[in-house]
Length: 105
Image 1 (spheres, rainbow, N blue to C red):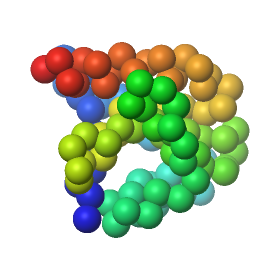
Image 2 (image 1 turned 120 degrees about the horizontal axis):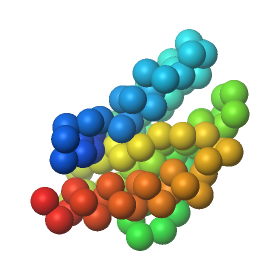
Image 3 (image 1 turned 45 degrees about the vertical axis):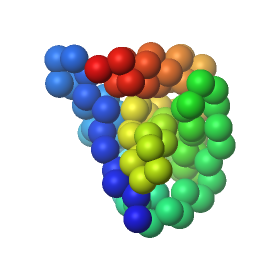
Image 4 (image 1 turned 90 degrees about the vertical axis):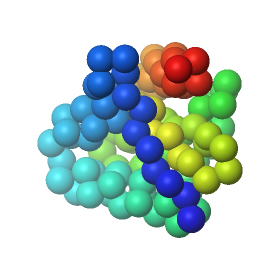
């Protein structure tokens, strides 16, 4: 069983939750939440490594939503940021910076 944690910025912002709250499509929001919940049981589904310890969870809904996460230790999944296919490169860069900040603290 994995523990799901949310990355918080130094000023306590949860970038993943901000992403999720910004989605207007209730079906997409439900699919994303469901996929994250399945990660807790070890079922990651459609995912792939990006770079520098950041992984991408791909959700096939709407514009192609993505959740960026990292595995910290053996049982912790750290949710970093979310986005869609259009801003993929910038989102990956942001996720890498978030992970570096998390590991530094």
